[in-house]
Length: 314
Image 1 (cartoon, rainbow, N blue to C red):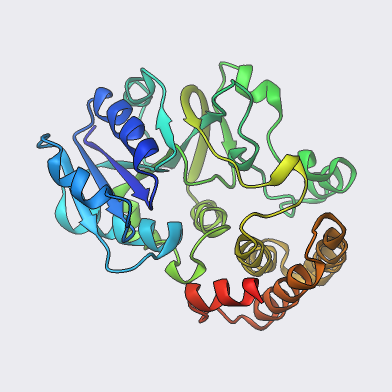
Image 2 (cartoon, rainbow, N blue to C red; image 1 turned 90 degrees about the vertical axis):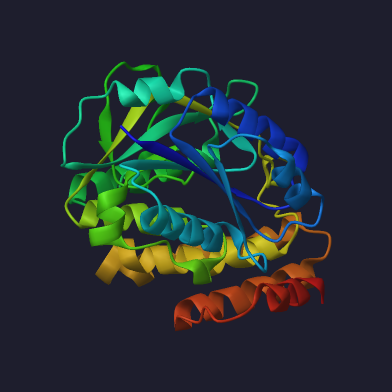
């Protein structure tokens, strides 16, 4: 299989070096690094790397993960003969043997994507990358989600220990392998207007809704060295990340829940507002949350990243 890696980076040069080292060691056909207008020396360092497999796409501005993967997927489709791509952030990398495990999988055109098992550096499951099942598929899954909360529709820990590959509905863009011909002919590219958060869930939900399968394959392992929430509480740092989480989350819920949208989002909105108790600057958090909720409900996605940062700083 002709496999290309797509890595999106922004101002994390130290971690990017580790990621690129581990990626090239897996011997892919090629590696595309999408540089989101980094200002920490990333551009200069990438120019110094002497490996013919490495290609660099320098963007003129930071377009977030969504914009970066949009540009990266598009570049792969238009400039390579890749059969598959695998995407991830600059703070994630494949464990040794991950690409080999992927290449040994039996191929079927029914399979549109393969999701890896993603762990934190200490070996714990990376919660933000835990794949999920659409809880609105049928009554059984909906009731399971209602009783079990988040773990009622995200895959259980025993899936990671299993030797069996299983179907999922949504996955993150960390360690996700995608069939390039279907990106070109069926799915298109991730929604760059989302910037970060939920772009991956929306995109992979689109894949399964189009009739193709995404398999969770526990033998393929990735590491994600990430920290977003403070002390495992619902505290976003920096605060603008809460804006994207809430606004984009409402779009995801609308797609997944359909007619049950309001039944789902009203408790969510209440919970988001109550999260203000975890913040020192409650006024700033509530302002960000209310604007994000209004934008999400009204389908407004035209605010620039700079504008959203300014909102979070008031």
